[in-house]
Length: 371
Image (cartoon, rainbow, N blue to C red; front, side):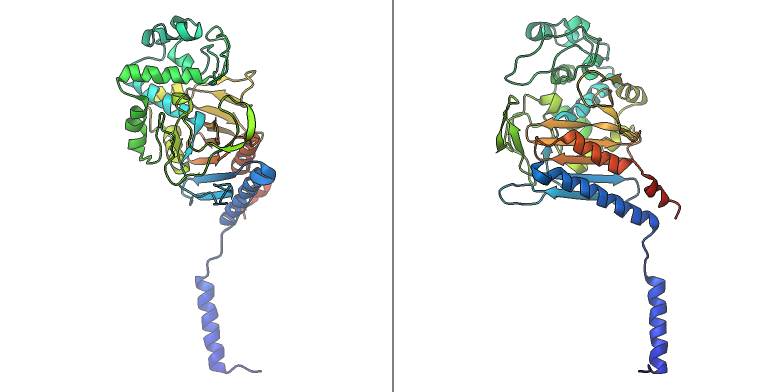
């Protein structure tokens, strides 16, 4: 069958126009898409075979569109999917906020990191912990070298050790630091976090709730396999619980978008003057502490070196019903925030796989840069 000459000309013109306007994905864009597929695969694996109810991952790279991935569910009864904008308890990543406030107060000469606990809280550690507050400094509280033990409600508190000898990860350190903030300012830690960090950075979903058991909408349901004292039990809903005991050490609520904004500002030096920035990122070894492997702890944040050799900065949080991680490069231009709305996942393995997939460039990925 022949096509009339006029129609042939029109067809040629149409194909020419289409060829000049069609966008062909670049090799770099194709590489990013492939990276996102790999991240999604880790998310899917994290919740497979009962590994947790649901998980989200929020990726931000400088000058590139954000990427948000989910797997599993936000609600085990309804099957509702997880979504952007959810509020969740961030657990120990609260320490990064508390440490930032303390360092801001140091910059304002309202306290020094060499001040002793006894100066601000006379008799407190002596009465409740049997320690000597005249030998423990604020810096030692923030980098967990105070010798004070960790404590969980309902469990017996171990004996304190000599300050400065080794790293012992302890919620007590940061709850004491929170009390010092309140003594130094005459305000509450919640108000100081709001005034100094949340409001200037427009963190609309970030706050320290105190004894408020509720979570703002939207939020995923939080599920736990543990009692409040850490004993294993059946999976149960702990969305509405009082975690005020965690306080300055682990009581805050936030969102992935807010944590990106906070972490980017903190790593990028926009929350602290240079002297205090150096203090925050001066680290001590965590080796031998039975804590997160391949880490060094600063003043509320820590570094973690991945198996591929890349070192990230930020922190994680584990609290009943919620497990979170927020890490990025040292400049804060490439960050990943993730949350699991459960507490029985092998979260260190899951998050390490997420960060390896995101930050460790394999040889095949490097080829995308030269094609």
